[in-house]
Image (cartoon, rainbow, N blue to C red; front, side, top):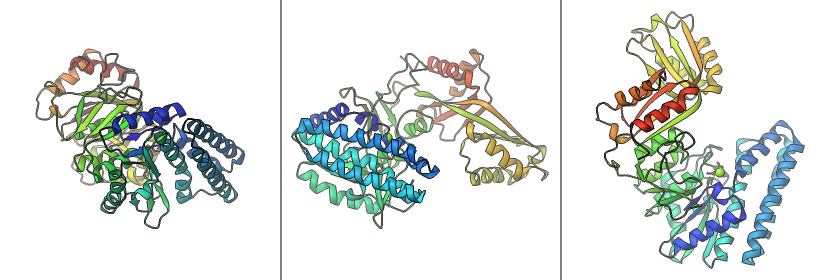
Length: 461
Ligand code: ASP
Ligand code: MG
């Protein structure tokens, strides 16, 4: 069971998380994975940035606030459990955090290694506090870092990659004996250790990845992700009033949905679970009895529905490279993507018509200018590309469902639904997995397009 930051945002939420564990531990052996409380990791990132900019006052203010916050929570949990030791161990961490910030402030330097060390405090605070809350309910529980639990990574700080087989082996060796003694391991999400023992982080949102790895290593029956939504939805409920929770989706569908902004796991995090076929359940910690959404190996057709969900990615722009000289000239696409790649522009969507006279890409809006400049420098004046265009006002609509594969007429329905609302489609792409049809419309028309498709495929019924 992984508890996200929102499910651990206050002392009360931590107590609730603990009682969820207690409830389900009657019939299950549970490993807990704890995220940092609330948005603590964001605050730690801000501290790192202040230190780097030499804004010591700002860093100090943020630091003091974070320290007080954790003391208040630890004190509240301790009062209930009459376990003073959690206050003492929170104090130790507070001091260590203070020294870390102070040291970095003197040097005015934040290397990737020290940044990871700083970011590790969020989970190092939360896991022992959650452990205390679980112990207060009479369970035997033990806090440990991801590194102590056995997750070993390379030393690519900030986005470290686990050494999978070693980690699996160690996770089993360290966690299984605890489980067989009826202890509940409480593992920090997000943080691990490099081979030489330095703390590393798995990238933002990495606690899901931790949970996925642990579930896979132990061949768990299920991995439960406790969060603040009821599960995966057919659409964003702020856009579509009758959006509903999807009872189950396949790993393939979840992957498409998570790429397309559904508030769920990072696609990367699904990998270990999907490889070892361990189902993942997304559940709302405020409504523990809800069934949530099950992500599993099976493709359920959900009463013959070809389309399961429609989502939207906002704040993107189109960058188009065109020129008569591109027709039949090999290597232009290669240069386009090479240039975008070396300039760290992430390409979200691609399309090229068979005339070959243009290649369009969709990138984050804040990266449009950088992309255009880089492409101008690299491509203009060589006889192939003669124009580079941009449109900043755009959003992507993604229509997802494994049943679309091999079913004729889905695209026709999608686009006539959109056309009936007089929404203009600017660009289209479908991957050959056929799990996903994506297209681009203006930002303003995005919500209408989403509603049109949700209605057309009766996703709310
Ligand atoms: N605390 C980390 C973050 O906010 C990891 C996580 O929550 O999954 O990115
Ligand atoms: Mg978080």
